[in-house]
Amino acid sequence: MQQEITTNGKLLNPDGSLAQVGWARSQNLDCNLEDAHFYTLKTFQPFRIKRWDYYAVFTPQRFFSATIADLGYAGNVFVYHMDFTTRHLHEEGLVIPFGKGIQLPRNSMTGETIFENEKVSVKFSVDEKIRHVLVAWPGFDGGKGISADLTLQELKEHDSMNIVIPIGKQRFYYNRKINCMPVKGVIHYGDIQEKLDEKSSIASLDWGRGVWEYSSFWNWASASGFMPNGDTIGLNLGCGFGDITKATENAVILNGKIHKLDQVPFKYDSGDYMQPWIFKDNEGRLDLTFIPFKERVAKTNLLIIDSEVHQMFGAYNGFFITDRGKRVAIKDLIGFAEEHHAKW
Image (cartoon, rainbow, N blue to C red):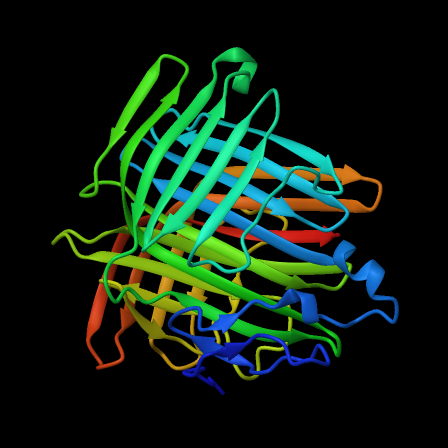
């Protein structure tokens, strides 16, 4: 059921169909969205193509995230953070008509992602596996302000979780998740300054491109952290969208190496998200319980865009079995799990 893509090529054929379907350990397909073909009048197609770069950073003190997204007929730029001690969470975002001023790169390996106006500056860049995240938002949280100057390092021969799946007959999703990138730099929030170093701070990237159904639903679970012996461990689980008969995005990433999983259902109470979430795969290789300690609710209701996210922060405990059959305990791994409904 899990078809691995091992050859380079184009994402789309000239007729707009997917050239390959499956999962890969790196982004080996060029994201040629100019060849998408799902409307008779191609003039309207850019308004339905979704593109985003989402960075998540785990430090000893806080969770920090910054996103630049172009949804076709609107852009979305948002930043949020949470203090692990006080559980204080604050988020602010901008909706930009038609994504004016947003720049996103063609692929995930090089280029710049940028949005700037008189209120905020958010910039991401990547070159030779070194990524920079620069944020300046002086008016954030009533004038406390937030800023970040971070350097993320993709380690040598570091696997990432890539999937290419169809959505219906004419749509598709191309996604790359990079877990467990060591981070150094500084985050300022109000009068608080936190210096980050690679031995205690770690980050992930969610890089997405594709054409979705207008009404969509998905679950996503993610974590990046350190084992007691200093090894890095990442988690990426997802379901709820597209045709996953040939590939899922389910994987555990240990010291930069993917251990691929098949089907992992999300078992949780959609009416009470603070209850435990259970993750057990269909092959007996994953058994995790996620206990939330904080709920982030993000709602957007702007005419044709209607979105609601319940993102739960908490700790994962349990175990997984590596590709070689070794049982690895997971204890108090901080991460998140979410439910997302969107009309977009």
